[in-house]
Length: 540
Figure (cartoon, rainbow, N blue to C red):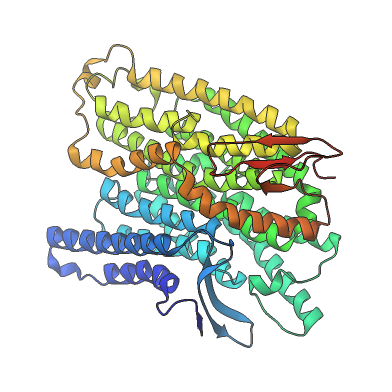
């Protein structure tokens, strides 16, 4: 067994919520309904808050450096099959782990699932699967965590969702399960090719990244991996399950689906596609850039045409994930860094919006703008919370959403400027549909039913207050994220450059060279502690 530290932080991080789920299931039913609910709620909160404390400890121990994996835990699990328990965290996964750990206790505190024993157990098991996916460095281990998340989400939607919950749950499960079948085939193919070349069967990512694959093999395997990740994210046009699932899931399910599970797809693209198939990534980048931009524009246009607030946020999510794809396949340090930052920002912002919409439904029995008007007068705190989420989603400077979108756009403009120009239109469209939705729901004269709506209690306001503060803090001072994310991204982009055998725009800290045959784009941004210089010319 190998550990970077005496204490296996990541192993405990993954197993803690799984153990909490088991304890919740074992709570006896003979305690009485009220006592059982209190015990289950206590188990859920203690488990998720303990997981959050551990994630915060990991983040505190992670210092900016060379961008490699830290806090590694590794031991052979099934030696004959080449499967190992290999966990590690770097700047790319660190804040996704922290974001997930923050959101799960807040979801429990929001009260959208009640205190059902089964609901809490499923939610804790889901947290274990999500955290495991973000830290797994063995492909089979990642696949197990990746698939584990399907079962809790299916039951959360089908049992605690709204009127069309059965249809939405089945559609979600079938889409994501079929996509994962391609992933499993791709994982086995990569491992067998490595065994053919070296005589050793392994599913370890750090080892497999040195496997020699021809361009045709890389393209086919890239498509197999990306099929699963694009469905999970979801990326246009593999998104058709998401509006139904987001709309019919309970608030807790919507938050976890959009804020956490969607990042498992985009994270998988960054972690596995860019690492294992660099030549295919470079050659197919224009296709993925086109899909990203199409998702930005399509999601915005459809959101403009819907009056259902949950579906509006679902299509808004599609547009924001388009920015993640855009930044990732720009294949520049700024673009990929922006994509990672945008994953974190989107998770925080979308959680605020879905939680606020859930509270609107509790008060008015609808989330259609046709049945809402004038909420701002009787519920000013609720209106303020929704406004922060809305402005963050638009990308207002001073809030975290601006940081990710800005880095994505400038990182893409260097190498693929027309895609960046078109994507900028998505920012304008986002302002249109979000401001329109706010006006319809919160402005105008309230009708008699709305005039009697109660504002948020102090406990409800306390649930979203941490998210609001984080969104504001990261919008003003994103340096802690960038200092830790950028070294890992630079390391990854360098690997793609070497494996893709292409000319990467040189990214350096400090002044640009005095002479350059192709000219230079120099960007000095307050978002980074140092100036970032990008030499022009682009990829071939």
